[in-house]
Length: 429
Ligand SMILES: Cc1cc2nc3c(=O)[nH]c(=O)nc-3n(C[C@H](O)[C@H](O)[C@H](O)COP(=O)(O)OP(=O)(O)OC[C@H]3O[C@@H](n4cnc5c(N)ncnc54)[C@H](O)[C@@H]3O)c2cc1C
Image (cartoon, rainbow, N blue to C red; front, top):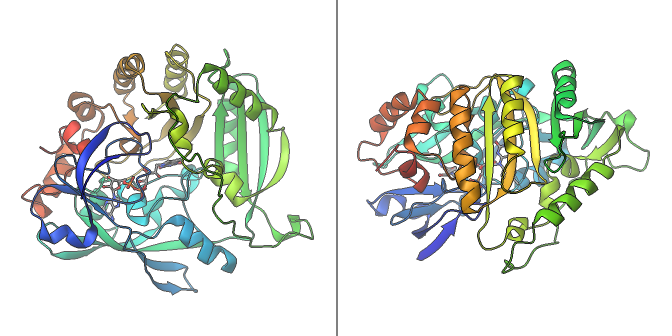
């Protein structure tokens, strides 16, 4: 079925033949797997080619209660895993800012969470991956193999992940004990993260893009012990997905200067300093509170700009440049990242900042100039969030791209796996 698809940012779009994943071997043209479509740009579809959705790969296959190793098909989402295993005291070791991502997507982007500085990325907790290659061969890859690390973060370009074994973690409760600091400037927030984040598994700062000095809210958290819960609280309480939804795309952007300032002020006022007990869903996935919230950005969608740079000074320089953006954001988060394996790894050590911005021509021009500054600082743009990177900048940022292509050629000699992202950044035709 021909259809127009986009990622979560609703920009760019492309017309593609959308097929269930069972059709992968029946078609010889170029195509790419698609999970829940939560990557922001054009990584999860192939215009004028095939997009293979994995929604039918929904089975839980095995769980070892001694080790926490769970084997699932790649279309299973983190939400489904949490609903099933949280009541038994288990949680994924790494979660992103939304639980509505598939295991295939989590591995292909090698996603990171608030605990990257201590736990690494998602694939640091993967035992093996079963990969369907372009000629129909199925390979089981383990972390000692280079192809495992080309597939982790490989954006679906080495093959289709069919199954994976992931290690869940035992948690003492489904609440996070979080300490919040409020600072008048971003510099002060970074100082707190630098001195404190190693003591906490979860560490992140929200920065107010509408505020001249970058006032910030720093969150430092850990799983709460049962003794810290109120007597009425259930130890392991899964929360079903919220029903509140934006039902259609409004003709105009609801997120404008006025609403951004209102939301930012609301966030600032409703996050008091001090220690608080927070249910896991509100802590890790606050944006999941409104379904289809991306529609609020209107018909042109939005762009997420996420980079990692080595030093605090690099981060601050980019922040001051971002203050001059032709548009404002209510969602800007900063955290420290560790090092990561893989030729396309989005890796530290360094600092990452992610910001949602309106998709306008002026913004795209502005961001492309910032991409050059990121490259000059030996920084990287996160591929799963990207909509704008061009081949020259990609190659400057990811010097191991040739290694990646060598590994891809060994398992995909015809170059069947290709997305709009891979074409845009010059990795494939
Ligand atoms: C609100 C929100 C918050 C987020 N927060 C974070 C965050 O904190 N940290 C972070 O790292 N990311 C974050 N993300 C990004 C998201 O985690 C990644 O883009 C993830 O890959 C999306 O998974 P998906 O199932 O939707 O994959 P899709 O978006 O459908 O696809 C993403 C990539 O995975 C590939 N892929 C999908 N399934 C398979 C498969 N079975 N086999 C091979 N390749 C496959 C696709 O080809 C594509 O290249 C966030 C996204 C949103 C919308």
